[in-house]
Length: 269
Ligand SMILES: [Zn+2]
Ligand SMILES: [Zn+2]
Image (cartoon, rainbow, N blue to C red; front, side, top):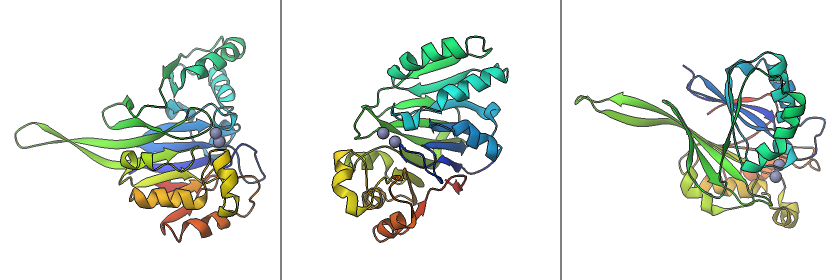
């Protein structure tokens, strides 16, 4: 059994560049795969990396800005062409189903598998997914539209001498995009092994960052430090910054154990 892996499929912001596609991450916990956000091109990147859609049963969408969900219709239509029969569960705000359903009816009506939408409330911190070994909780974020992150927990049940079970959390991964600086999330993500926090702008663009409700690299690092995260991965880079090492230069003095998300990179959780 692996100990948790995170593969970056897309780490740019709204505008794709030569080196970045919009947001998408492949999370593996307890030998199960989860997709978090699905920007344009997500399926293509999955195929390049040999990540099999047959392993995927659950997709989590943080918010309905296009750079986080425009890849869904392509992915879901292709799964129909591949004759998938296993259901796909999508956890997102209720509006996603309203937006996607007409496209699915038009392009993927003959599919052999069910798409099950699970409406979530991004303003509430709650458990939205739970099986024997993995649970997922929402993390309410502060962005221009209703947005939440996701906290993944890998848990195992240990049998005690008296026959009862003790539930032990082994790994925790928090995905926080898109958001402006918000200390309100700290109690939810406290002590995570791995924190992904968006870092769209540099300090020189801090005013712009507040205006459009995003974070700077230093903002992300402050949150990681307050939350005592094991490590911080930053991404969702503005297309205006070509040299991503500038983000690292601003984050590391605040939180040393920071890494840059780059496409096709896999991190241990
Ligand atoms: Zn975005
Ligand atoms: Zn957004």
